Image 1: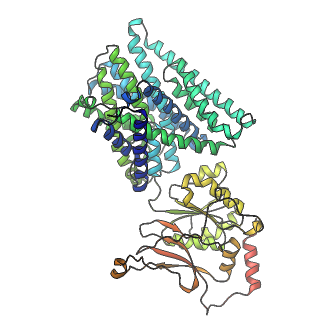
Image 2: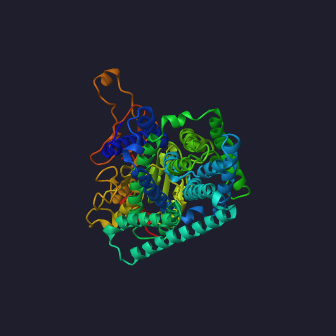
Image 3: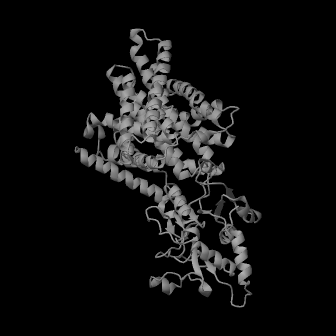
Length: 623
């Protein structure tokens, strides 16, 4: 067994990050892999027992980490995401919580055989779903924005509510001998909710005001934010245990909707920390499960877990969203998917130990039942989320997709060719006039400013994997790539080379800001447009299979453009997409399709220069 704190943390982090990479590389549910990594470290091999390796620090580490995770969740919640669905979301976080608590309590008592006091506590703990498990599933499932927002809002808000319900239920069980009544419990609950919400919301507003007025320098904004989150969590916990979770969530919700100029940088910083914390916590909490704990489970425990998944959750969602604005297929998905995560594990571990020390009967069953639900829902829901969402039509395509920003003659031709080839294409421009030729041939389009808040709200990127910024303004292309790089990946955003249009005399931007250069250094906006009016066109070449002799000598199939054309894209046989770029030529495989930009055949009749120039000028004129 590992007794060293450094070795324990290192093992958990390395295995967790490796699990994250495997999940990304092979599109496997990451939470399932994290749980398996923790089980291998803890119950299976006994290499790491976090409670012993970390000692009394473990509980504090879990609490502070969960506070940061919930703050980031609240910070990511934008009120415009639920416009038109506000009533449905309110039902999920009010009626949904209460009905889930009631039904979970009944199942814990009548099926798992727990006494009423312990059944009430377990029912409250299992109300939570949480961003620690829902967030990774949403990233991998590529759920459509409206459906994803429902999962985000429910999970992030329900986490602190479920924890508070469990804590106050515990206080009621412990305090029954001192005359504490259900009415006292309810009054104290609403008071704690109000105070924690005011503390967190007020702290968020104050910090946002300090950022706006310049009282905090840029280099201190992210560290000051982290310090403020920990301060608010600790202060709220002074009022009531676990009230800090609600306070930090409220803080993130207020701060995230203040439209701060530095919001994007802060969001990136918090997202990086949260990925690290979720990875570390889930591995450690799973590794902390004792084999003897799991041995206490029986067939009635299995029946309880199945009932929670197949009956309690679906019925609670159905009743809570009855006659709401949430579409039926989204309600079906919500009714099935409810993985429990870090908050449920942390609260069960804390309360289970305290209840056992207080002599409450069956207290030793609280932790194993909670972890049985966590592990089962993580594995089953992680494996079925994407297939069920696809069956319901709530996800983007598994194949690659391309967002082209800037509608011009040659980008419309490129989009049409890719659309006809079966690739998901979306052509975006601020001008409806410039997009009209694309719409007339059936190309999916988006009219509006994609960098605006409204554009971010309406733009559906669930089927998009790559971006090409192809306007005549290099600065705007760079800004677009900077904006979408965190969502799509820095290696998936491309822009035309500098020296185009109004920026012909402006030096190129730093490589840390701009996207990768698309096609070649000569493929400027002016040059691509000039070639189009000279008769250049897009053409596909299928990569032929290599001969057995070539394969044995390690040679790859040849993929060349005929007639002196330029390679543009490689359309993979499996639906993938690869850009050609200066200094980078993707390796072709048999069956791939090479998209080329070809000059006209020598015998083709060319347009007169004057007519071509006039038409090009008219096409690029702003409205």
